[in-house]
Image (cartoon, rainbow, N blue to C red; front, side, top):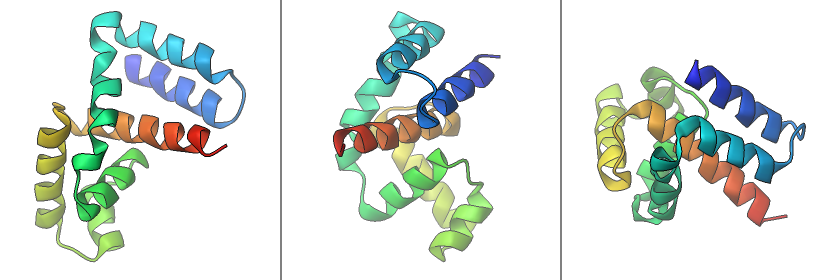
Length: 115
């Protein structure tokens, strides 16, 4: 249920149906104040990723499977899994899902910063 609500909120922001500040507050309330830092803290550590890890990170945010990521980047699935393991460690995340949500937040932040 939380994932569905988060996904709906992301789409509202991406489609311009909501005010981003209001939607970010909604996301924070859905995650819980104690858990909100798992999105903002990793975003501040994205620069620690190598170029290839960053590529995998962005594709995770787009919801691609390991197989699709490996095909897109012309590497093996084992290599993708290794990159994901390093991404999780560097960003101090527990799951691929968290990495995907953080990648979406990062992409959204970059888009807003460039306007």
